[in-house]
Length: 471
Image 1 (cartoon, rainbow, N blue to C red):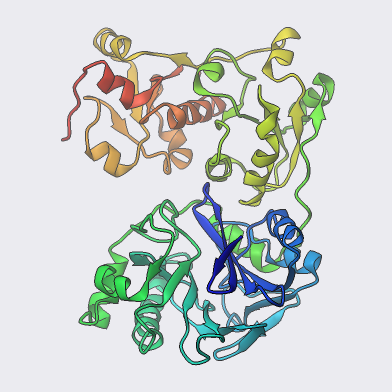
Image 2: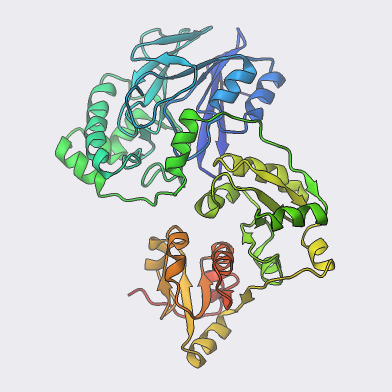
């Protein structure tokens, strides 16, 4: 447990969604609050129990779009007060369950610290931030701000999640929030946002976990005191980010839906697993690109195990659809279930006991993805004009260099553009093979039969000494 000047302070990072949540409180009293908790709340409950702390308050800075909130469940299980913005009335998304409403100037005391509410609209209309006061130092000068997505490091939160028409209005609100609410706050103020680098909640977020207000005034272009409202709005709306399709659903989920505890993964024998598959359950294969390519259950989606399982599933897995898992390493199954639950995919029915080997040994149908090394791609392109190279990397990656003749469809556009795929043999390419395997599995699921990918991706291409173009 970290101590910050006799305060209790702990930051929890969820790397898959670049999400930060915080535990803050009074060491002497053993009373703490949790701010912007993630879906799997056991991490906070276990931390509090281990350190003999009482979670008395649970705060949310706004109705989140990128992850399933754990605030309601955590407050219930900890018997804490659930504190949410009171500025959601009449907005597109309005919280429908019981909570304590927070308004500008409200103060919550936890022993020797205070949390003071600021209404900071912009990223969302109801957004609040929390100023932290260490009463042993000063009751008038705050030491930190938990800024949610209002103020991110090096940038500010995106404004287009309620639609482009609302974005201009929100941009103007954000401009005045910055001009009015940050005025008079000390340069030494620590800034603790809800997201870091890699999140789609803001463009160009710094990879630093926290910052100082004084540093942000010098480095964050949107804190430039000479920037007019018109210039601020123009600059901010020029920046476009991919919008995962689940974002709108997640805001509704976080404002209305009930929560169930995240289930433990259940082992299914072959009969039970096949029954789920035959009934329409989606198979998520957690193995790596080589193992998947050499054989997998037909119509499986390959999302290699790791911190990004939920992120990639959110782009292609229908909400409220039953899921079953395939893996050769059950040790990461619990984290996989948590990762899926963080984006609202809660219906994991279980995993195949014994993994893919069980399916294969039973003589059941198997599909394959061709793994085509760099040199074979060159010769195949020369010999067969019916081959289409599909590069699924991001725009910046593509612009740095790509295979001559390749077609660019970003992985974030691919699920919606799958019907546009040419009726040719498709060979998918990314940086290292993870995304291209995911893309190839989506193509197979969509009905394409001749599908391959470049194992090792562009790293393997460059390693073979092959050239790229940038036009």
